[in-house]
Every structure is written in structure tokens, then in C-alpha cells.
Length: 291
Ligand SMILES: Cc1ncc(COP(=O)(O)O)c(C=O)c1O
Image: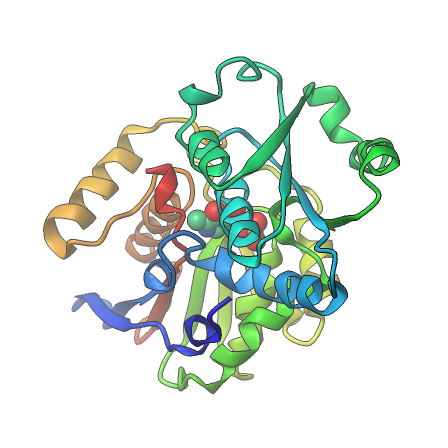
């Protein structure tokens, strides 16, 4: 993989200000960091990909990972495997599209990158250890990436960003699901800053995951609800935010993560949850294949 991709600073751009509250909102364009493994995915997969490179001498392991039929992680994992020259397998939650992969753009993209799929029932999907045990018995030469890429390995890819000067900001925030990205990006905090994770999916383990991955900054982190009717559910307010960002800023958002973060963040600002003088940096975590 071309290492230069990892060593380019993302653009940080001013979005808007709220003069009555003396609050400024800025955006970090992680969505622009790679055309296929964009945003948080590039950061989270880096450590895994480096490990695969270290492990594979002559025989490349098969990259195996988990995700839904519309998961950005599946699309990114397939693209990463192709770049590394590895075969890949996606274990997909739900069997509805088993005979109709063309219906999901994500699965089409992943298939074009050479990924094979194993569709499993939602019930079987819940027990990933058992799935891994069964699949390992017929694919022993595998490198397993957990769902969303979230594990200790995922932290390595955020290290380079520590060289960014973010001292002017009072808050960083991003959309959150498994918590891996939040743990990674919150490593950039200095001790006076706060990190707000906007949680787009119900996940009772989020705080323990973050604490395990980044105990150092844990006290500076807060997670707020940004589900807007449920994971991947449509919502008028979310459609509206996407249109405003398209029209006013020419910044594309997608409906599952980044638009929900901005909808909740703007609501929080309007309802006074950020104090006067705040300077907020919202991280655009990409995922635009899901748009
Ligand atoms: C675009 C986007 N933003 C944010 C997230 C949340 O990342 P995490 O699962 O690391 O919390 C995801 C996860 O899949 C994503 O695709």
C-alpha cells in the first residue's frame, strides 16, 4: 500500500459560526483521505494491514471480516485486501441478499474487489467466536479483522495525526458505533479539550470499549445519543442536513453516520450544550460509498 496516503494531513476547514453564542464550527475532511478506504476506515485498518504485511512472507493470508450488507467496513476491507494482494471473505449479517448481492452497492463494490461472502443468519452472526472457530476449520490461513476493525491494532493508524496542531479547539467530535474511531481520534486530545462521540447505534459496550482502547483520555470523553429513529433509519431531519451541506458547503454527507452527527451537534449547539466561546472540530469520517 502506498504509504504516502497515511502521511498526508487532512484538510481542516471553517464551516460556520454562531455569533450570539460566540461558537465556531470547523470540519476535518477525513472523507478525502482515500477514494476507497475513506475516513476512519483508513486509520482503523492501517494497523491491521501493517500486521498482515509483517505476517505474510510468501503466503498471503486471507483477510476475513464481519459486517452488514451496507457496511462501509466491508467495502473498505475488500479494497484494502485487493491493494495488499490478499483474497478476502466478508461474513455478512443476514441472509436476505445471499442470492441478490447486486441489490447492495456495498456488496457490489466489495465483490468487484474480489471479496467472497458468507451470509449468516442474524442469530449466528451474534456469536462471532463460534463463527470464527467454524470458518477457521476450513480456512486456516486467515487474518481476522473484527467488526468495524475495532481492536488494539486499530489505534496505530491514528498516531500520525498526533502531529496536527489542534490546540485552538475546545472540542473534537465524530460519529460513533463500535467506539474504535472515537478511541483512536481522542488520542489527539490535549488535557483541556473534550471529545463528544455521537452514537448512531445502540451499543451498551461503547464506554467499556473506549476505556479499554484509550484509558488515558477516557475522562475527557462523552457519548451522546444520535440515533434519530434507529440505526440506518431514514429521518426527515437527516435528509435536510444532507441537503444543507450539499447546497451551502458543497460537502457530501451520508445518512447513517456523518449527517446524524451533524444533526445532533447542531441541535446541541442551539440548545446550549456547548458553552460560549467553544471552538468545535467535527471529524467527517467518510463512508460516502453508503450515500
Ligand atoms: C462513516 C463512518 N463514521 C463513523 C463510524 C463509526 O466508527 P466506529 O465503529 O469506530 O465507532 C463508521 C463505522 O462503521 C463509519 O462507517
